[in-house]
Image (cartoon, rainbow, N blue to C red; front, side, top):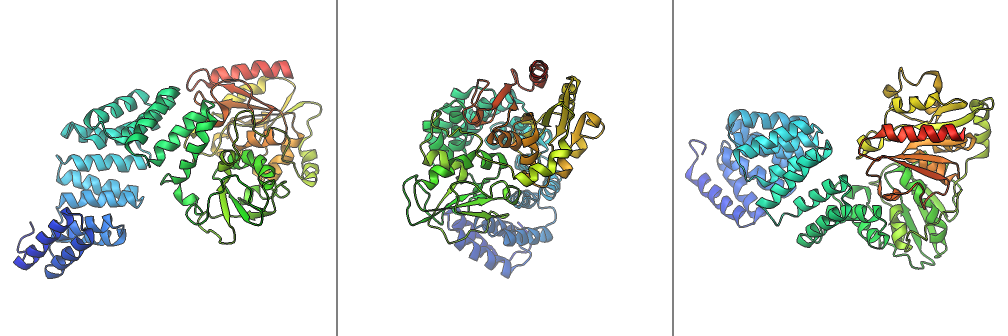
Length: 524
């Protein structure tokens, strides 16, 4: 303990520790504060006060307390370790990494510092380094469950699936009641296309923790992918409760969730989704929603404003850029992806009449000369979605893969890719006319697609748009596809003009493009 601490300060500190251990965090805070007022150089009291503040969610106060502890005792390794955890919570990952490295330098045998460093590195997407730090924690403490859990999550992010499975299994050997390990295990099994086992692992997690939103959401994805809509849609509602996504659904605790029943005389807000493709796919349900009566208000992002300006079934289109500004002029709400559940949708009742979206005639005319192709077959392409998408490394391919298709004669190629310009340089050349820089919003993209004979793209919003417009579209899918494409088949109940091309093995885009090239030559 810090030298020259008065007896009165020690007495208050000991009382605080007792209260803290009994779970009286607020009482402990008062006692720790007394100890630090009596002796402002009482490092241990400042450190524990920081921990108590953090438990109460008072992060700014916790930061100040930890800094005071370090000023009082600059070589206090445990404080650096705890401060690192706080910085992780504040998403200040570089600072957290430096702070935890200081803790390790001061106390090389502290397993908690290595484990927390692994967390910081993983949150910063430095997965290999994260695994290495966690393994050092395990070397110091072989039964360190949380370090194994971190290895499992980081390994899954770099597709080291065997490592992820082993780490989760080891965590379960240490703690058979660990719901997180079962949930993580489900993610690895899903990535291996072992869907039934993934569902079973989620069910084990839910049995241990019935309100575990991530486990319910993971179970939903496996159920929907395997075509079990009856169980999948109710589970999917848990997605909105996942802590990392909760801020995107501000209406959940403000208004009743619509259950699909009649709502005459009331206003129903259908809230936007984070993905453009999700929104394009789900607005097909709005006429059925309107048929239940009442007023339908649809949220949409600015990029979709023009495309959605004349949607059937919508009384009011509300353009929103910020999820965190809820309004109070509605009676009910439902996220767009909740509509299939509310309407009792199964595989045979998906509204599949296309087109259900239409391009603006003025914009179609504006793009006509730009897309002139002198009798050639006009194809639009996109090789990647958003770089920030959780599954981008699987669903996106490379422009070089598409460049192989340029060898097919009689085709005029138009790139619909927006962003990721650094991937295009030196490859696209004259074969792929780059339209992306000229596209303002989805209204422009819809007008362009209206002129095309075919769209070929990976699983991104463009394939949803082409399908909703009723245009021929070939969608290129990874080995483990998104839930909406099911596990097998060339067709999809969502879009009758869409054909699916699936990877036969994880990462095997070569086989996909060889098949596409064969089919394209036959078509052209």
